[in-house]
Image 1 (cartoon, rainbow, N blue to C red):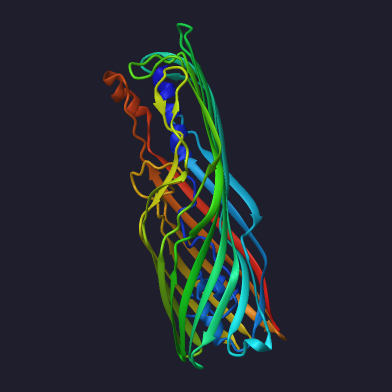
Image 2 (cartoon, rainbow, N blue to C red):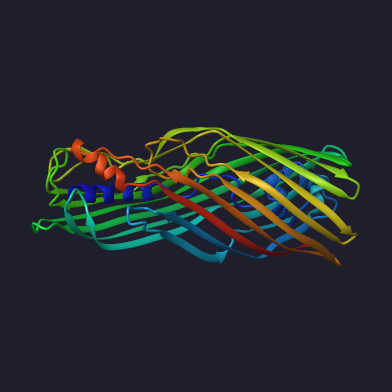
Length: 453
């Protein structure tokens, strides 16, 4: 019985540690820029330049207002074979996709200087996984009845708003800087309820609840340089880490276990601790990006690459250790995080069918910045994501309309390891524990438009 409950504990912590917020290129903006997968650092041609490369705005001939229009996405996260009974857990939802609203100021006193504004969603995640099981299992040569429920909810948003200044050094070169206020909020709740009874009538129960939430306010700057030498364009950007302003949050640990007998686990266990209104912060990395486009006849190839620096381990919530009520031992209520250095790249193709009709296709990588083997518990989504996009844009009067779709996918094998108190039972339990597969898919539909003013 105790081995079955240990399996449940392990499954709980495995799911707790797999949120999806360690990707930097998982959201694209704009009209053309979205269909090119965001591979437009050196060739952005719409108001998404406020994010991709602020210098490009200095080369625009006419200001415009950009509305991403109607963008909907379907997300699905699936865990396959998460126990020896081949239990699958799936989370899916359909919602409006994160978007961008941007525009330019037209004050005459600005002269050659250009000033723009933008509001965008830098990160968004909303996943919930819920699984129940009530079975009779043969465990360690004995029949055992088991019932349990696992719930994991992950919600994250990081919204940016700010101003962009750009200045044309000449008709072919420009510089620019965007300053954003980042408001990052995350709420995570994981819960396991499990009960089992063996033929001797021994009952074991466990309740495990882990919950935390926080909000962090930071300032971020992105500086860029752009060059337009037809048929060649080029651009580079540098993005600073967030400069922390303020933040707060709370963290809850609630564990109650009875009926589990182990050499390393006291019985019963009761540990509860809730800390609120504690200081919170989130640290983002330095990044350096570059890209170019090259015109081939009437068509154009786009390429971008961006390096993201590592972020050393840090405490998201400045909590304090607490005393386990049932044993008097000291335990941690910490929420911490770290990120590794990664490089993303993308390539896009722009095909000009007619003067007012263009087609687009792109492929973009979205590597996970999670550190393999990390013991941090904020989020460690190890799977890399790949984005495929395609669509078309056409012009009517002063408005440009965009229609397209993108498909994103990623997967990983979860190697579950656990140390059992009884060495003799380890081999038998290991046979019950198979690697499970986690897969992520996203389908996004776009109908967008921009208006010249």
